[in-house]
Every structure is written in C-alpha cells, then in structure tokens.
Length: 113
Image (tube, rainbow, N blue to C red):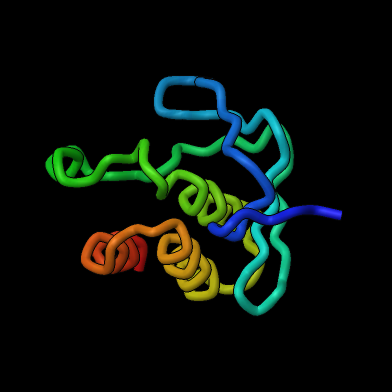
C-alpha cells in the first residue's frame, strides 16, 4: 500500500543528471489524482523537467515545488496516454496541490497548452 503526501505523490523526487538538460528518475513515482486515479512513473524515466524558454527562466524556477508535476506531465506526454489536454489538466492539478501560486500555475499551464 502506498502512502501519498499532501501533493498527491507517494514520495520525494529522486533524480540524477543524465545528459545536458535531462534527468533520470532513480525511484518510481506515483501520483494519486483528486479523482483517485493513480499514475505511475517508472524508475529510469528520462525528463527535461520544465521546458522553460531562456528569456522566461529568470521568472520561473524549475527547481521548486513544480518539479514533480513537470515529471508527471512529461511522462503522460511520453507514453501518449490520454489526450494532450488531459495531461495538461493533470499538470495544472498537480501544480495546485504542490502549492504553486495561481498566477504562476496558470502561466505554466498556458505554456503547455
């Protein structure tokens, strides 16, 4: 049985640098959505975290509470499970549960939409 944290994930994000701009997941991660559906991300999954255009990087810190949501979003896109909108909406939900403020959360959501 998995225990889920307040942000909906089953634990901490355990990443290691892989190639420039890429990270590899060292332990599996599970997200339990507000609807109760679980989304697994396996060990070895490679992510670029948040793809933020260079001119916007001073405004968005990719190393804050949005990291798990970014990995979840990348995984949904990568395995092509569901629609793009479903992945983006799940990203928005995970950002909110991670405590990302309204303006930043919606800017990030608009960026992926």
